[in-house]
Length: 227
Image (cartoon, rainbow, N blue to C red; front, side, top):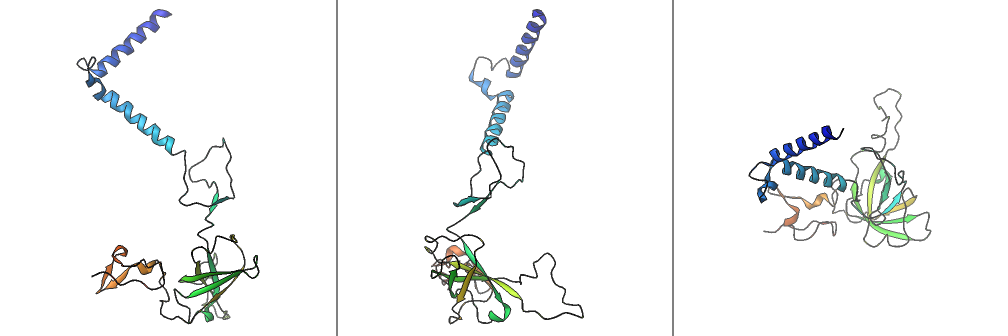
């Protein structure tokens, strides 16, 4: 049984030498052969697959609803956990449509959470939804029927808390809050968010955000573009 195995091994050595080439067997050129390059490509692919085993979150936060355990196999697209960015939370205020007549982007707002009586968080109106909550529901109402009854609709308004407001006491997802908006400032737009204000129109041409003198996220008024 030893002779067939020995002959097979010698044949494999001969094939390997033939793949390396006669001129490259005793020089540095042996590392430039297709066989070596193929092995290097396989090594890079294995290293890339190894990096895929480490998943980093796009922001810092607290893990909630973890559904994965050590040693468990993960399938593509499988939800593993939820990460709550405690320093980047915002409030969605569902105002009646009749209450939004004077609401503008950038107006100051005060938020009181039921979990912390007497504690007031300060923020501003970031954006107003383009549709009511019922429009985006699973079964939106059909108002074309003859027996339709008019009902006051709710419109989501995004309230972003000012920097440092979430340090203490911390808020959590799903809490009940009461939001009050100061409508005295009517200079802001009704639709565009503060992030969208980073693009201005000057003579019909858009001005890039990096050309603005002041970051538009710092306040409700976008800066004038540089000349």
